Amino acid sequence: MSNALTTIATQVASNLGIDIDSQELITTLKTTAFRGAPNITDSQMVAMMMVAKQFNLNPWTNEIYAFPNKGAIVPI
Image (cartoon, rainbow, N blue to C red; front, side, top):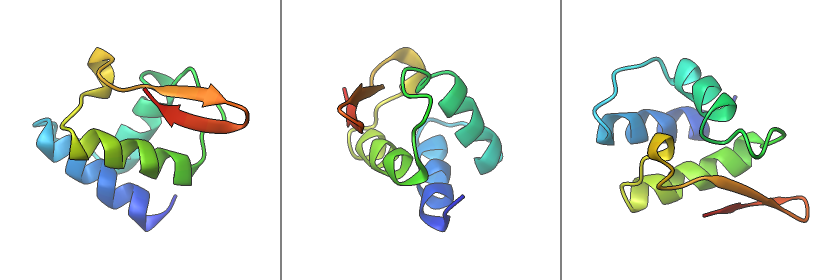
């Protein structure tokens, strides 16, 4: 797991008031909120989490989700 992903996941969790280990958060996101993109990479997760952080979006309430598109992931 990349440092960038750990950092951004921690920031998003903080914005949402969630106190959780960053690795556990990433695993949970991949298996729940981003389950539509089962092969999401760390880089793609960073991009998704950056959008979530920028717009204060909650992935668990479907305010943002990963949409696979031609081998890429599009934040919706």
